[in-house]
Length: 271
Image 1 (cartoon, helix red, strand yellow):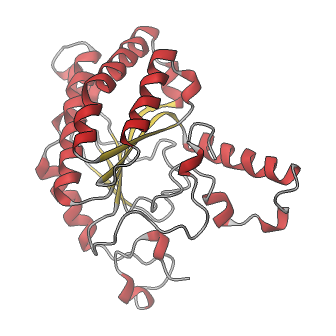
Image 2: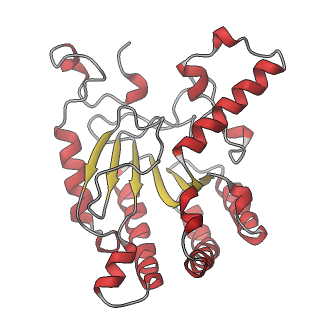
């Protein structure tokens, strides 16, 4: 389990999901918010202008999920590799991140949104970590929308942290190596108490998942658009949902076998 996830969030195998199944509607949507820099460059503006415009698109996406009754939304805000960007840009992003935490959390709490952060939290400055902790604490009892923000996060890092947790338990004699299976690993991954994402959306035109939720996306439906993140609108999100609803999710079975299981959430796929 990544060190940044609170122990109360750990879910044992077969832990009931806090999100109801609503048929063809995805229970959990994961998003790579790509294109802020290119949006700004096309307008001959600094990259930070694009990041500020992207923050408005975040609010639109949250509003959309609340309106449609989607139970979980995970946003890739800042990858573990993003620390290698120019120092000036990283510093500006951290300031934007802190301002957003100060400005948005109270309203999200009022609307029933639970906020959590996944990733290497210790890499952030103290004031940001304090705001992250406070946001999680103040919204912990909410359940209308589970909003996960992946910050200083990487999918490989997530898997490594789960492996490290398992190794520690084996060394302490609390777990036998032969008892380690997919469920044991999954229970120690970030977001283990939520269903795996049903729908992955990436804006900006690139066709890759960029080290995001590598374990959790195993059977997720992938949807890509050329629209840059600051250009996101409700119509684009509606198209993504319509495309998702039309797909047959087979979970490794043949089409005939899976005929009765179309759009079944991945944590309820037939054995």
